[in-house]
Length: 163
Image (cartoon, rainbow, N blue to C red; front, side):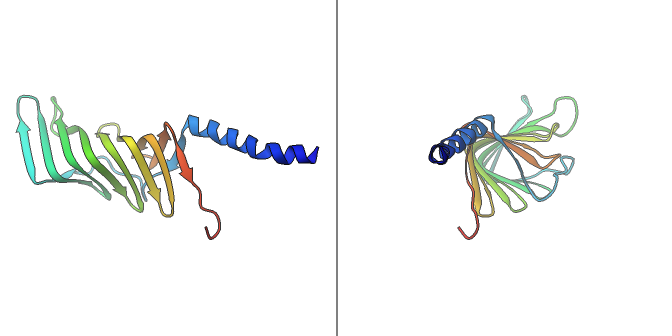
């Protein structure tokens, strides 16, 4: 009987961990809560503005900064609010890198909704936090709370002891 328990324990652990992966994983992201009311600074090699649509496209080594948070990408589309001054949202594509405090995340695309303070990263998302790494199809960062939700093919490597 004890042999049966020993042999089935690894199977149980594997099945339980896969159920957790399917549900997604919530993690802390960034050193501090991000203040979404802070000004947004964008630097790039090129800028194209369309007054009719209220959009601006930054290309070439684009870096977006807001407080302690930095986002870089090959291209960033900025959509301005129609009714009031300010930015409504940003869409970053191409080698996207989001850094906040000691945490960094990479993806193919990121959408930053300024009003609700969320960043949704999609496409081969890789989150690194010190020696740990998590991959997923999608990561949603809540800047107000400093948390992130990983979903879709979530995989992590947990370091234990001196490994």
